[in-house]
Amino acid sequence: MDKAAIDALRDAAFSIRCSTIREIASFGSGHIGGSMSIIEILTYLYYREMDTDPSDPGKETRDRLVVSKGHAGPAVYATLASKGFFPGEWLSTLNQGGTRLPSHCDMTKTPGIDFTGGSLGQGFSAAVGIALGQRVRKLGARTFTIIGDGESQEGQVWEAAEAAGAWKLDNLFAFLDLNGQQLDGYTKDIIPQIHIPERWKSFGWDTREINGHDFSEIEEAIEAAKKTPGMPHMIIMNTIKSYGYIPGEGIKSNHSMPITPEGAEEAIRALKEREGRV
Image (cartoon, one colour):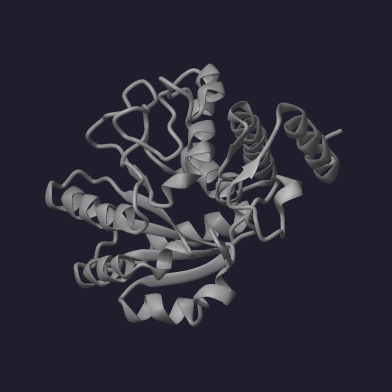
């Protein structure tokens, strides 16, 4: 990927990040932390990797994305709107009465959502089933899924991982948002996430670890995974929770935060300064 392509992705991610901040501010509070940490992978998947069609979001042969950490819906919505799955004006209705953009992703309400995010761990299990169904039906399609590190404390995640490894689902690409935090604080203080690459490998997964905010590393990992047949793929993304919403970076209570419209614009100005966009 050349510099022009990387710059285009960075520009798209910046726009999606700003839209996500404003979207949450329109409601007054929301899941900013886990939304902001996955914007680079969402941008790469929708702008460069996945076979999707905004004019036909239910296309049978499409690639699917299951965001198992469904509370990151605001970032998913901002990405889908940027690709034309629905009007950008919908973003200002986040989590409000009559909205089609609820707090957690809901496939019955939002065009482009492939699975409803509910209890943590369930989406990942569904992704395994979807990938298996794609293979059985010979659709030639792939399933991508994003899980959280706090979510990985769910036993259901590891039951699904064992099944995917046993079934050799090489059309399944999973991304672990390893931001070191969960609802109640830092994962190291609750249930430490240790030996993560070794654990996934032991379940029969092709496993890589990257900087989840670096587009070059994302591309290299996905391209390498595509050249590794016969195994499901886990890409462990080292990320920063609330990345790009500077008031939330590094603080303990950044899972869900209050944001005013004025605070949103101030945060966006600070981000522009940091990225040299002023």
